[in-house]
Length: 290
Ligand code: ZN
Image (cartoon, rainbow, N blue to C red; front, side, top):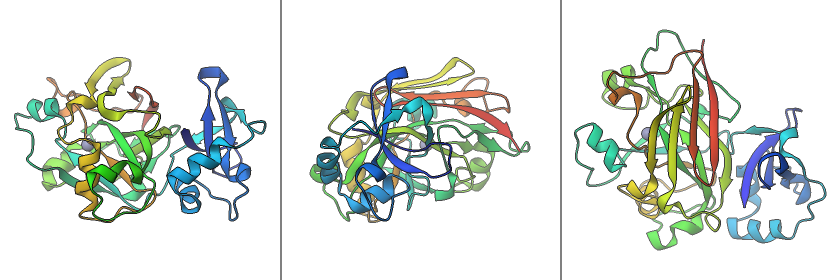
C-alpha cells in the first residue's frame, strides 16, 4: 500500500490510500471509507484503530469509487506530530568516510523535536542569521505497532512502512553545542513524505537516495551502504525507548551533505531542494527565510 495524510483544501486532514502513478494517481479517504469514529486526522489515528496487518486486509476490500484525483488533494506530513523522532548519525559508510571517521561500532542515536515535522508542500524556513543550514536525505521508518525490546526478526511487524525525510541541520549550532538537538529541531527541520510505502511493496535493502539543490546533484547514495540496516535499528532503538504508533526513525544520510563539500554548500532563501528515494517519491521544497 501507498498511504498518505491529505486534505482537500478544507483544513480537515485525513488518512488516504493512493493508487496509480502521475496524473492518474487517485487517493481514497480512509477515514470515510472505513467509517471510523472518531475520524482519524492522520495515519497515526488510523493505526490506533487498526494494526498494520489488519489495515492491509481492510483496505484491500474497500470500494474505490469514492477516490479523488491526487491532484485535487493537498499532501501533508504522514504523521504531523509523531510521539517521538529518533535519528541515527554516521550510518552510511561513505558519509563516515567523508568526515574521516570509521563506521561506528553501534548506532549513534539522537532526537529531534516532534514539532520539527513539516509536510511535502511546506517550505524549509529559518532565520537569516542561520547561515549554515544543511540538507540530509534519509530513509524514514514509520512505526505502526507499539513494541519494547523488539528482536530484529520481528522488526517488520512493527513498521507501517517507509517514507522520505530530510534531516535539516544548522551546522553552526551543531558544532557549537557538540550535540544535535538544537541544530536539528527548529520548525520545518524535518520535512516528511510524500507517501508511506508498506514493507510488503518495497524492499528497503538497496534503495537509491538522491538530493538535488537547484537541480544540481548533491547526494547520490543507496541504502545498501547502511552500516546498520532497518531491522537492526528497530531492535536497537526499541531496546532503549518503547516504540509508539506514529514514531519516526530517521536512518541516516549518505555522503554529499553541504558542510563536507569543498567549498561548503548551505541552503539559501530562494533555493529549491529536492530529496528523493526510489520507490517512495520526492520532497521538492522551497527554502525561505523568516
Ligand atoms: Zn541525519
